[in-house]
Amino acid sequence: MPHPPVTDVDPILSSAADLIIAGGYDAVTFDAIAERCGVSAEEVQSLFDTPNDVLVSMLNREFSRMYAGIVDHVERDPRGGLLSRMYTYILSSVYERPLARTLFVIDRDALHEIMRNANGFLYLPNIGVRADLIENLQKAGMVRPDVDARMVSSVLSVCSAGLAITAPHDDLDTTIRAIADLLHRSVDADVADTSQGKSAFYAWATSLTLPKTTA
Image (spheres, rainbow, N blue to C red):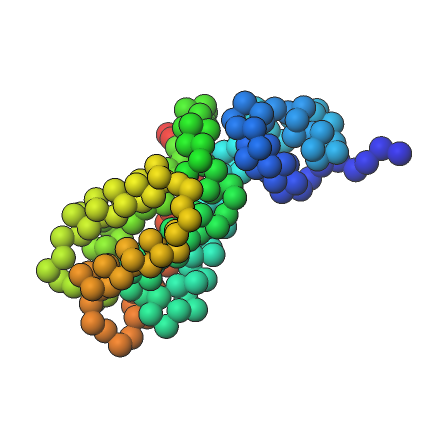
C-alpha cells in the first residue's frame, strides 16, 4: 500500500543529522536520507532542491533548538542574567547536543561545507559571546561598566576555540566552571536582580535564530 506524501520535514532533518554525525558531509545524499526515513528519494527531492538545502534547514533547526534550551536555562536560573551564567549554558549546550558537538567541535569542515554550498542563503551560526551582547548587558547593569566588551568577547572566543581544539575533555565540567568563575569575578556586576540581563539575552538570542537571506 502506498504511503501518504511526505509533509513533515522533521524526520528528513533528523535523518540528515544522523548521517552527518556518523559519516560527515558527503554521507548526506537524497538516497541515504530516503533510506533512513523509509520514503523515496523523489519525495525528499520534492521538498528540497539539493541535499545541502536539507542540511541548511537542519542547521537552522539545531541552532534554534540550542538557543531555546539556553534561554530556558537562563530563565530558570535566578542568576541567569549574568554573563558568567550565560556562557556556562552556551558551552554546555554545544557539548551536550550530538549534532552541535559534531559541527562545532568534531567536524567543523562539515559546517564549512554547508556554508560554502548554501545557495542564496546567508547563515551565520555563532556559538560565542559577541561584543554586542556584552554591551547590552552593560546597559542593563549586568556587566561592570569598566569592562571592555570587545576585549572580553575576544578572550571568550579564544577560550571556546581552545576547548574545541583540545576536545574531548575528561574534565570539561570543571573547565567550564573555572571559566565561568573567572567571568563572575572579573566581569559580572554585583546585582541582586538579574531580570534585565535575562531580557537582554532573550532579545539577542532571538535575533540569532532569524534566518537572513541575501538580496
